Image 1 (cartoon, rainbow over the protein chains, first blue to last red):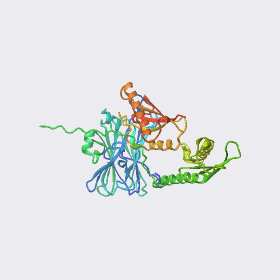
Image 2: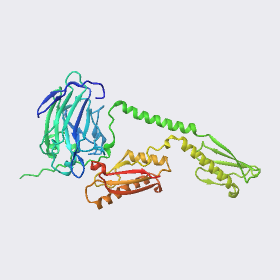
Image 3: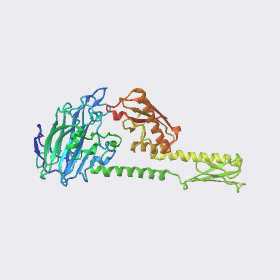
Image 4: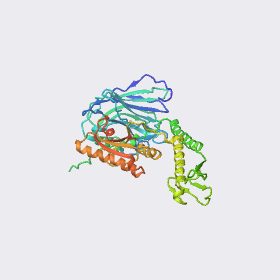
Length: 207
Length: 244
């Protein structure tokens, strides 16, 4: 965290459906971490993209994702105005990265007031665009959710360990339908078609 | 009868735009403009502080006792040199910035015009030495990536701050020459990628030329497949090195 916030013991939502209450916060940082591997032809991968999609309380849908899909920087969101969430830049492994190195992407969320639910998703971009079979469970991946809350738990982790095949993983959901946000382990891995059907706002990256 | 659903496909990313960093800390949003304004103030202030208001030179003509006074006014963008010769007060030589137009008899005025050129050169050199905007932000021998191409694309198609910065630097430093190299990822055969990389290098070269950079200062070549970076997108790039 940028400001000095003492993180409390980490709460790991190990299984699908595990839920934790998210105490009031001023800033939330969601980080996707994974380990790079040799994915053939001497290349490192996978190229995971962290994304968030939401359904608003008024029924509206949307999301934030890499600006590369639509060549629109606005797609990465804003922290100081709607959608109150902002994606860090699309991370690429550095030129001197090697297999076993860790990679991460990060987003920040300032508030959830407008949203009924927020889906934290990951896409395996290279395999999706190439139409190759893909899984998410082989890369020691996890999503950490950290807030600056001092009144409740502020340090969560959701493993990205599903071995199901698919190009998109809905890792976790923040359910704010009651006004008291809860973080839920989703770990649903799906095809692009299912992603389009089941995740609100997903058309942002689909044709 | 069952109807096939429309196939859902993923939009293809172009990483070019993603290079634009998203400000995270509010203070950074103010800090960067303040730094830019500060640097601009230093550049402009330094330029006007060190710029001589006028230069006056006594020039001997033909080694005789005739003298001419060469006065270069820097207050006007079109610097003029007015030459008056003792005993030939009606002759006047006018020198415009960069070019010399001699309104008096050329044979007599030539040495003075040459001297005026020297004065202009000295002024230019002083300006180059004193103007911090002419300090190169690039190091010799180092490659700078200026553009990433979308998959299979050879044209320069999207705005890119690094490329615009390069144009600006080249305009401020007219003596600088660069060598452009372009690459492809490793999808497809070598011949195709070699040709694609050459088209990419030419596209960047052409963009610079369109933006006012003389072709004599540019060279370009396609380097074919690159696996320098782990990501295909990063390998689909153009970069440059200072070549002088």
